[in-house]
Amino acid sequence: MLILASHEPLMSAETSGACRRCPRGTTLYHQGDPATTWFEVASGIVRTCRFHADGHRQLTGFFYPGDTFGLDRDWYEETAEAVTDATLRGHARPAGGRDDDDDNARDALVRALGSARSCIFLLGHRTAQQRLAAFLLVIANRTGGGLGGLLPMSRADIADHLGLTIHTVSRTLSTMARKGLIAFDQPSRFRIRDAVRLRDLAGEARAERVSPVVPDMRAGLQFAHE
Amino acid sequence: MLILASHEPLMSAETSGACRRCPRGTTLYHQGDPATTWFEVASGIVRTCRFHADGHRQLTGFFYPGDTFGLDRDWYEETAEAVTDATLRGHARPAGGRDDDDDNARDALVRALGSARSCIFLLGHRTAQQRLAAFLLVIANRTGGGLGGLLPMSRADIADHLGLTIHTVSRTLSTMARKGLIAFDQPSRFRIRDAVRLRDLAGEARAERVSPVVPDMRAGLQFAHE
DNA sequence: CGCCATCTTGATGATCCTCAAAGGGTGTGG
DNA sequence: CCACACCCTTTGAGGATCATCAAGATGGCG
Image 1 (cartoon, protein in one colour):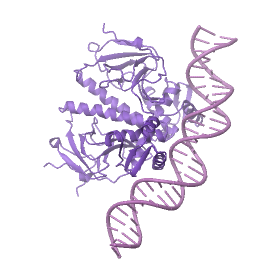
Image 2 (cartoon, helix red, strand yellow):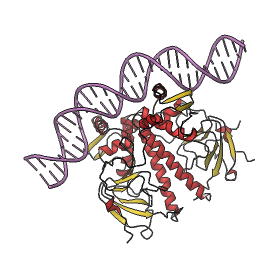
Image 3 (spheres, chains in turn orange, green, yellow, brown):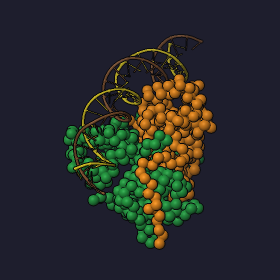
Image 4 (cartoon, helix red, strand yellow):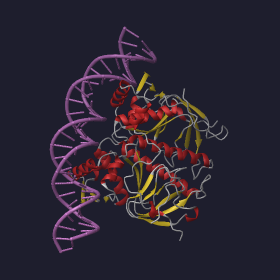
């Protein structure tokens, strides 16, 4: 078995586009490694995370087939690991300056920003119930057509994503099941039984504007292109 | 006086849109508005936020002179407001497709991602003390050369940024001052008295890797040149 | 001077983390 | 094939933290 030096690039430029199977648990790259490659998930699920000094993880995102991750500037700012067995497509970044694969890279960047914002929004929920309800709705939309979904990641992953403990995650899910909001066939498979109440619990953002705290003063904001 | 010159202006006077003074409290744009313009802060401070359905805010970032914000794809995903009187330089985005001012826009995008990740990392801290310590260190680095800094935003802004209440923010800051970690001349101006303990409290990420939860299996990750 | 907004502080209760232990799979070895 | 170990999940009890309710301080401004 080959052991890569810790800062050895994972892929060279020529391998761009190559696919690779990664067994569950594989660390794809570490925070701090030189960011030479970004990835697209072909199959499986990947998580990105950062570590706090006290050792606890903050999962910053789960990435599903079609999603991209790892588009950092100089060094990876997060660690990426395979949640399940996964297949990845790597895209090399030219070290100096912009990618020639520009539109794709730009698109991946925009989506990375969206992903980060989703994470902020999840963490912004006040209670464990709210965070988990919001999380389940996100998962359901991605993996179950809105009626349910899969939780292939461990309770620990969910906890570290939402800023909770595995105990609170498990307890809260049980409570939600007991209340008839959701149901579990297995720990990794749930169905939504009462979407309305679940949505209310999550405090889902409707598209409309909600009670601005500050008076609207946009009248003062036309940028005159004089 | 803010000491923040971490980047050069992104736009020259010729290519930029007009500059505009915005009084404190101005809403620059609302979440959901068409994203026609992105901004660079020339002076003052701007905050971006999203609203949860229950009405409470999540501040996603504070932006200082030189910072950019508002580079969203179709519609703004956040609301932007002036924390203090501010001067902004607006830059129009061609509605169809990519900016021609591509490098600048790309750069702003990368920094927006960094900003979002900082926010995640702040929210990832477990306790109010940790979050506030980390927040103060960030502020100190941006506005006070690391020895102290300004808090021109209200306690409510800080609270909504860190996912706390104004009560907890105020109480925690008072406690930290009583312990000799920091000192306040005014509510909006603090000095760091014990950087070591403050840093410990914040659980600052040292650059090195910290105790991976999962065994390192990168050996399995060479992309075969098939 | 008085009003208003902001900040601070106190008391109480809900939520969540910690400590502890029991159930439920899966894989390995006997 | 079964027994056992291991890991993940679930559940319980108690305590720490933070939100809520309430009220007092501080500062700016008319």
